[in-house]
Figure (cartoon, helix red, strand yellow):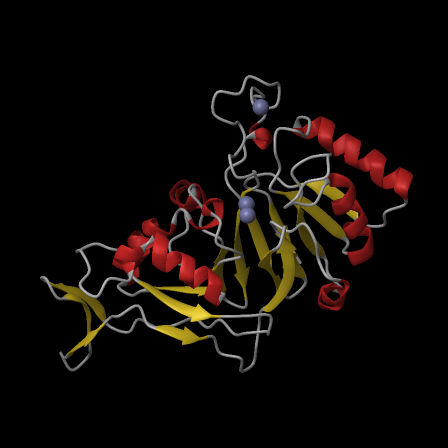
Length: 302
Ligand SMILES: [Zn+2]
Ligand SMILES: [Zn+2]
Ligand SMILES: [Zn+2]
C-alpha cells in the first residue's frame, strides 16, 4: 500500500512571507513562495496522521479539507509545531472523542504548562480534549480508534463519554504509553541544537524537521526510502537547523530517491530560482538523490 504525504506548511517559524518584510521572496507572487508553518498530513495504512499542529493548523485543515484525524504526532515542543493544538476542538465536536496525540514525555510536560486549561480537573466548557500517548525512540503503533461514546459536558464537572448503556465515564486526558505491538511508525532521533526531537518514518517516506544533527546510528532506519524531507533555514551554519550544505550532505548519505527541503526561510531565493540552484549544486557534488524544495500543497507518494 502506498503512503501519501501532503505538505501543509513548509516555512520556518515565522512563515514566508514574514510580517512586514519587503524582500523579493516575501513579495513574490508565486504561490510556492507562500509558506505556512511546517506540518505534514500523511495517509498511511488507512490512517490519517498529522505531524505537528502549529499556529497555521486551522487554515491548513481547511485548505486540505481534512475531515478526520486518527493521530497527531509531535516532533518537539516549539510553538511553530504545537501552537494550533487548541483548534483540535473542531475534531472533538465532529468525532465526539478526544484527539489522539503522540509525543515524548518532555513535550507533554511543556503542553501541561502551555495549555494548563486542557489538563484542568474541572475544565471550562469547550476546552480541547486530548488523549496523550507517550513515545520515545522505539517503533510504535497508531491505530484507527473507534468512538468511545458521545462526548458530553456536565456543567461545572467536566467532559464525560456516554456509553452504549447510558452510563457516563469521565474523559480525563488520560496519558498512556503508545502501543509497541505490531509497530507501524519508526521514530528517528535527532537534535535541534541540544534539544532532542523526533522525525518519523511511514513505510517508504520519512519526515524529518527541526534538526541540526542526526546521529550516524539513525541512518540505518532511513535505508531504502523513496522520499525523505530535511529541514534547512539558510546557507549559513545555524545552531538549531541544518545549513543547506549540511542538508545536501545528509541527503547524499541517506540516499533516498527524492529529498524534499522544508522549514524554509526567505534566505533562499524564489522557488524557480532555488530549484535551478539545487539541481546545479547536486550535479556539482555528485549527490545521487534528487533534492528539491517542497512547497505548501505538494503531494508525494511512495
Ligand atoms: Zn520549527
Ligand atoms: Zn523577506
Ligand atoms: Zn523547533
